Image (cartoon, rainbow, N blue to C red):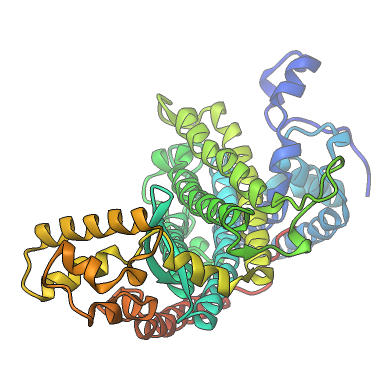
Length: 478
């Protein structure tokens, strides 16, 4: 292999090379290096297409394909982006490496294409893989939450509004609430994948290619569902990245809410859960501390992931058609957000898998704070009392309990009858936690039977989605 001096793809029109400062400002190899294997895959597919229209002979196509595979192996062996090469971007690096191996034949590869359609294709290939990996990581976390729900389908815990005790629910119902959020994230990602999965290659710089290639076949060969329909749009379209980041932002918010719940529940004041040593840290000064750092980092990274979506929105704002160099900044936003979300999903799964619930404490707190006041109101409604009146009576009963420092179920029947004559001895049956939970038996409710059914539904739904994700093999996240 004969080494030649790296050259820009566009230098013929220029008398002078770019200034060193501008070159550092302009070069993107450290960022877009993540797409090197995707660039090579797109280049192999392109070589096959330009052979089909006579630009390359069969032998030339085979030699270029073999050369590109050598470049792919070399790229995989490098520990990081080869910035010492002085090359501008990943596309230039791949072409330079190919020319080193094949000489002038390597220079034929770029016939009929532009970096505009190539980078968009690479970026879509990367994003498609990223979504598939994110779906798999979401599935792992959802499965862990479903396991919690199955294990604790009948165990009570307090639920809150305004962070005040509201009504008892089961631990399983709580876990399935977060699984439902993440299931929506999975559905949104799967939906976004359909719009990611179209191929811009063959659109050229913006007007299309001058060679009569079969873009439908090219799209199929790269695993895309279809080619992009408008070359002018395809050259600068980043909606697919914007949509993916929107889903990542929503998912990050859900993870942040989960983290916040568990931080609160782990606190000494609540003490509903116990976090494992595997996901906590200590204090350099206070020996007694066990800090929920994994959860706090998840909560903190939510802002970083969400801001990436806003970053791309602002980047795309007011860009005229077609490609503009602004879009060199698009990949950093998605690459960073994808990496951070991946870590958050995997750490959240570890946290859920290693957390234990203090069932006695959960039951105790579920019964505290007059969380069964609504049951008293419903009891009176069943006796024929209008709900608004029943609501007021229940409030007065709470006041009586506070005055006597007793929960509703410990108030004497005479005290309750003094508040309303319709209250009888059978009221105590409806004020238990079990009665409160069992009564919430409408679809979507917290009764143990409903939670058990919901677990089965969630498991079935998840496994159907997992089978789709597992159809894409060989995907790994660094």
